[in-house]
Image 1 (cartoon, one colour):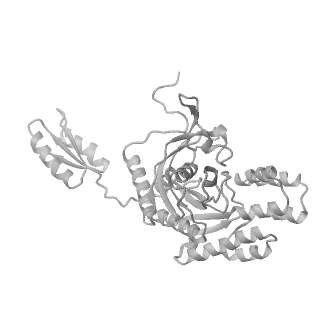
Image 2 (cartoon, rainbow, N blue to C red; image 1 turned 90 degrees about the vertical axis):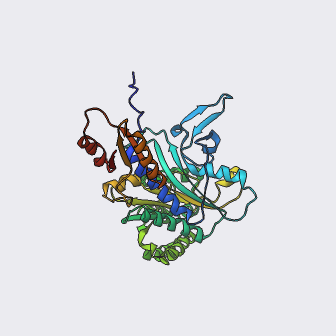
Image 3 (cartoon, helix red, strand yellow; image 1 turned 45 degrees about the horizontal axis):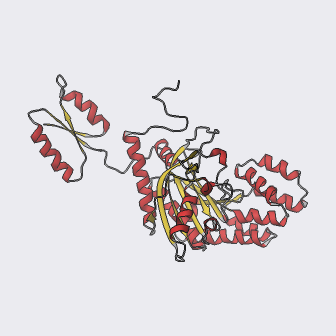
Length: 392
């Protein structure tokens, strides 16, 4: 029998200081996003199965938490915010042509057995910029990512940027069918370059194009090398992809943000709805991405509205782990709350003092003094936890 005290594998309880830090981190990032004109959007924690189906291009069905409603419809706990935002946009903003900016926070759920220390329930804060296909929208998204991480306290991080059209252009030039392209994409998105090499060796592909496809796995380069990649490209789609990266780098350089980016043309997301730039952020202290995002120009079409879009999510649990492991101090005052210890005879006086502090926006906890407990006992319990103590 499973103990009622344990949580299922891949989820955890949070309380106290750790939970407070997590909430503050998410709020900090959300406030940075809002400075760019984004408005909060709240979508349901579960949707109809079709919102996250294979046709949409999200994660495999086997990794979804599925259940049924009373009518027998298959429902799914959201594994990903973007399809939910796409559905919501198509429903409520179907005729809107002006850019739409939404931000959100909440939990996602992925039922994978390949945990490797990863959580099945993850907290994410993110944003989506809809109805804008420009490089300026891409640059804005990356600027928000960089500023949010800086405001969270991280100083050393890297945002790696890819472009799915570079890969697609070579696949088209090699006349790969959709099934072959998808299988190759899966190898590369999981960084299984040995598997992709073996798979390509089985295909009847021109030797030059075969070399180019294999070379994608080796293309991890600074911005200064993009010009050479542009000149070497032999199809227009790949050329346009690299040219777009060059322009984005120039826009980020205006604010000095180019120092935080590198380029990785092997980056191909497991989410097949990405159609342009893809980016992933990393920092010290964690091996998993702390930011994931990209452009998805055709996803909202699946729900009935043509709307080129770009967005990303911040992996709050991973960022919090990185902050703790790198020893970054919180900017918040160390005193988190006041604790007033009172007796039955001093209750009215203690209540009056507590109300004064609360009126100033300070959290106050009132504790009835236990018989036999002295001041030193409460000092050890309260002050050691970063609170201030009052005896009344």
